[in-house]
Structure formats: C-alpha cells, structure tokens
Amino acid sequence: MAKNLIKTISLLFYIFLMVGCKSSSSTTYSNKADGIDFAHDSDKAWDAKAPYVLKEFRAAWVASVANISWPSKPGLSTQQQKEEALKLLDYLSSHNYNTVILQVRPQCDALYQSELEPWSYYLTGEQGLAPSPWYDPLKFWIEEAHNRGLEFHAWLNPYRAHHSAAKELTETSIVRKHPELVVELANGMWWMDPALEATKKHSLAVVEDLVKRYNLDGIHFDDYFYPYESYNDGEDFPDQKSWDAYLKSGGKRNRADWRRDNVNDFIKRVYSLIKSEKPYVKLGISPFGIWRPGYPESVVGFDQYNKLYADAKLWINKGWVDYFTPQLYWKTGKIGQSFPELLGWWQSQNTAQRHLWPGIRVDYGGDDLNAQETIGQIMITRGMVPKSKGTVHWSIGPLMKYDSLSSKILEGPYKKKSLIPASPWLDNTPPAEPELQVQQINGSAKIHWNPKVANDVYHYVLYYQYQSQKWDYKILTKNDLSAEIPLIQPQTDRALLRIGLTAVDRSWNQSLFQQKEL
Image (cartoon, rainbow, N blue to C red):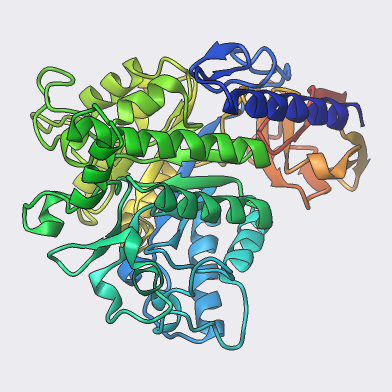
C-alpha cells in the first residue's frame, strides 16, 4: 500500500510538472533542465542486497511489413496467425530472451483493433478488413508474451503512410482520407509530412491510444523518419508546400535544420506523452547506426543527420528515450563501420545514462563464423556497457532459420535467463518482500511464496546455494508461486544450504533479498 501511494504521488507530481511546463517557453522537468527525469534519486538504482543475477536486455525484432516475420503471409486464418505467433514466442522463451519487439503499425495501419487507423493489409490481405474469426492480435501477443515472462514492445513507424509491398490503396488508407498530410515518393510509397502539426498530432494520438488501452512494456521506433533518398530516386523530399508555409510564417531556420526540428519536436512530445500516461512504459528508438561520418573520426558511410534529418545524438544526449538501440549492423572488423568503435562512440554520447542496447545483424549464414561474430558482439557489448547490458537481434527470422546459430547462443551467453536492467529514472522503489515458506519433504526443498501486493510483481528470482558453491538462481514468472530444489545436488552429492527469494516489479527492481537456512 505504501509503495503504491508513493508511486501515485510521484506520478501526480510529474503530471503537475508537465502541465506547468507546457505553458513555459523554457521547458524544465524535475531535477534536470532540458531533459526528462522524474524519479527520486534517479541516478542511483535500488540495491536489493541480493546475490549476483545476470541483468541483460535480450530482444528480437518481429517485422510485419512485407510479412517479413509475422504473419508469414496476408490472409491467414485466425488460428494460423495464432499458431505462428506462439511458435515465435515459444522460441524466444525457450532460448532465454526476455523481450519481443513486434511491428504493430507498419504503414499508418494497425495489427490491432483501432478507431484511428485501419486493419493492416499484412494481416488480412485487405486494408480495413478485420480478422475472421475476430480477435485482437495485439492483445493476444501481449498476453502470451507476459505468460512466458517476456516484455512486449510495440514497434511503430511514425511517418510511413503506404508501403509499395501493400498492393493497391484503399479508401480506408490515410492517403485517401487525409491526402493533405501525405506526399508520394518515386518508388510507390507514400509518406506523411513530418513538418505538419496534423501529422504529429495523428501519430501522437496513435501512441496515446496504444499506451492507454494495452498492457504494453514499451513503445519502439526504428530508423525511418524522413525517408531514405533512394525511395524518391535520389530527389529531395517533396515538402515544398510546408516549407513555403514555414517561411511565410517568419521561419528563419535553414531547410535541413527545420526538418530536424520537426522530428526532434515529435520525439520529445512522444516521450512526454508516454510518461504522462504510464511512466513505466519505456520508449526505445533504433536509429541508423552512424550519426554522421567522422563520428568517431575513422567512420565513413551514410549521414542520417543530413539525409533522414534524424539528430539521434540529441535524443540520447537529452534523455528523450529510455533505451537507445543504434542499428550497428556491421562486423567487428569492418573498417569504417566497426561494431565496437561505433558502440564506444554512442556510449560516449550517453550523457543522460539511459540504456544503450545496440541492434545487431545476425543473418550472416548458419556457419561457425556467423555464430562467432554474433556471440562476439554480445560479449563486446557486455564489456563496453557493463552497467546496463543488452542486445537487440535483427531479426527473429535468421535466429529461427539457423539452428546452429541459435544453439550456440543458447549454449553460450544466453545459457541462463536474465533479468532486464532496472530503469531507476522511471521507478527505483522496490516491491514488498514476498512471504516465503520452505519445507524439506522426500529429499527435496518444497518452496512456496505469496506476494504481498500481487499487482506489483511481474517476476520472481529464486536463489539457492549448495555446499562449497556460489549462489545459483532461477528466474520465474509472476504466475509461479512454488518450486522444488533437490536437497542433494545431483552429480556432486553436495547438500543444499539455503534458499533465497526476491520479487521483481515492472521496472525490474528486486525486493529486499531474504533467505532461509536449511
């Protein structure tokens, strides 16, 4: 009860600050100018005094655009869609991942029930057509992910209005319903104009709707802001109308800075919106892996700052994200785009101390070299970002395709399940200690526990220690309320000495460690 009261007061205080700041020309949030920081003592995570447990974000992208990952093709039956989804979730759970990132809005459409945008073509084969028999795929995915102890992050594309792989436009498309918001590109795609306030409000409304109605753990954007030049045959983005309106209104910025301002404003507003609704919902962004050529000095390649008008460095500097996942899709030894070199540079920019969980490419084939590269990048990330370990894998398809790759990751760095690193700026108040009982019956320790505040617990960590060994652990879901541990360890004949337990809340804070001697 006390913890819930504290969280309620903190949320009300945050909302008060947000409302007060909206009318101010200089935005200042709790404790920190020009950033967003609303947890008390937020730079210091709660210490549960528990034995070691690995904390590492392990995620995979599941893309719906062009039916890359799920569903495998448009128009599958409801049962087939569910079976495919469960296969993906079972894979992630059995291979010790802890997060799924599903693309739920690939092109101003919805893989869920929405009053704002039509059902996705990639789901049913016709934009605007609901699944039959009816179900809400997003609700299904969230429930099944949580049943397996996985976080669920909803991945959205903020500006893409129509993808060329989605066949013909229908009357339900935003291109038809709001033609004033979109422009056509040479490759057949349509794009919302990021400069328009109506564009921002529409995408913000979509985010707000998702956060309010669904039990999400995160909102996720990828690298698509202004489109890549290749989408328009190398020609400039066709926003002359909105640019002229900006100049007519007295705007003084050059065109590139104006475009970056449009995206920056949207990102900042998204973060503020999410935190005003449900502060525990994380915002993650996965931009192109290079900010600009020359940063660091030896890096060459695509300039997202001047091409996508994405000032990703600013977002991590300001703390407008909870986790940052640059797409570092290059090998460790790649001259000009080296994985560790780029990761080190992004780490140097993480001045707000948010989570830095790089995205890695895993589709290099199923041979030993692919496994060595993937495992090497996971281990490099652990070493270079030790306080908040984590990796996001592009994508789930190759992970499932190459059994040898999956098995080597599982036998290596992902041999045991892991907690997700806590986010103390969101919540550093621990859950209450669960009630713990241990009985010795028929050669086993029979362990039972109950939470004191059930809706504040999402996982448990069961610790156990055998004679002359370090503590070991099992990570369990919120539905697991009992376990059994042999009193004598198989193969070693060592006696079980003690049992420990913590409850884990939604922001991955552990309760104060408790133990019972045997």
